[in-house]
Length: 243
Image (tube, rainbow, N blue to C red; front, side, top):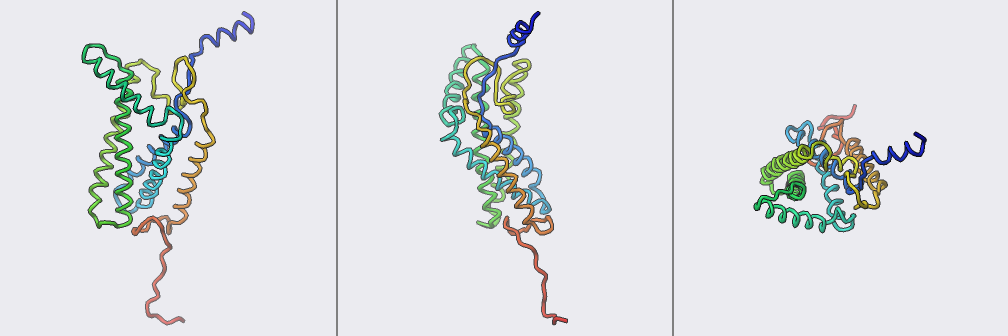
């Protein structure tokens, strides 16, 4: 077989794919997941308070980006796309009651519900966490902050379970890879024509720079219990005379 024939055979065997998630959305997804896991693990004990607060403030910035991206991002990342998924979900749920089960729109709709819950509980967690850090309302919001964190954990686990169930029902391939590659198997045009890798790199660099700033501002690597803006502890002089 000549080279041209070999190339055509290789091309024919390759599975076509299309881009459905842009790079900034994928970086947001994984950074938010990393920040949540880190913040949840470090939520108990004063030793890791600086890490917990830093990750919480990182989540504030990430959520700010996502809210903006709902408006100016690619069509697949905007609020309109979520409305379309909800509409398809309700149609699939109605069809399932008559015995016509279509898993793909059901999974997409359930995942969208889970993601709406994740974002809602994330906003609740970071708002209550900021108020607790600034010592607003005393200790009244600590239970709200804890409730939001536990609720967020349950929703994240539900989201993972739905993704894995979808992967199992499709016997390998599936939508779980799209947050790694941004692409899904299938023919058709890219839903996201511009990947915007440069913006994803800027997001990652900004988060790392913030973490570095927080670490360098910590006295001896420890968090000041009074808040995020840390100051070096000053020695007490008392009434001793200078020698």
